[in-house]
Length: 161
Ligand SMILES: N[C@@H](CCC(=O)N[C@@H](CS)C(=O)NCC(=O)O)C(=O)O
Image 1 (tube, rainbow, N blue to C red):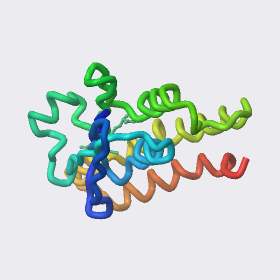
Image 2 (image 1 turned 90 degrees about the vertical axis):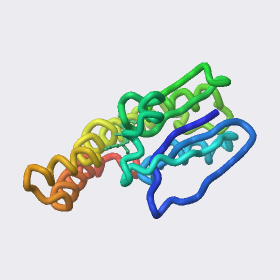
Image 3 (image 1 turned 135 degrees about the vertical axis):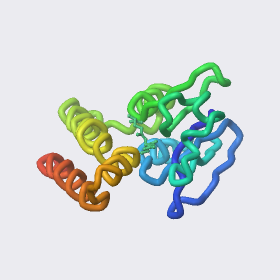
């Protein structure tokens, strides 16, 4: 199994195990944590977004969305390029240490949190959006602070449920 993810200074470790590889970014903690939590053998490979490696032709041939993560599994016959489908695949393929709680309501809450982060927060605070904001004369830091803060406010009611 192989996953492409984003690399930065704060997450500079490479894990090589028997089964494949993963390319990671520290903000892509969801896939990395799921793999580590479940103890899934995987090879991590890092795509340095800050050096535009996501736009290199070799990587774009693998992931035409120019994003991480990319998971290669099932002996190279399965490719996934979206975090949630990757998490769902890992959950179903490796059910022994489940990511989701047993209780139906709790499961729905976890999915609600995931949806807030994946749909409301991440897309508007992504690197390519920050670069565009800067290009249009805005402050990258202010944009990131505002969008992440307001997005996270939407999660307040659900923590600790
Ligand atoms: N919808 C995708 C989003 C993937 C995504 O945007 N990943 C970011 C890193 S967290 C990325 O690769 N950004 C590249 C860029 O902004 O140029 C998912 O949920 O996996």
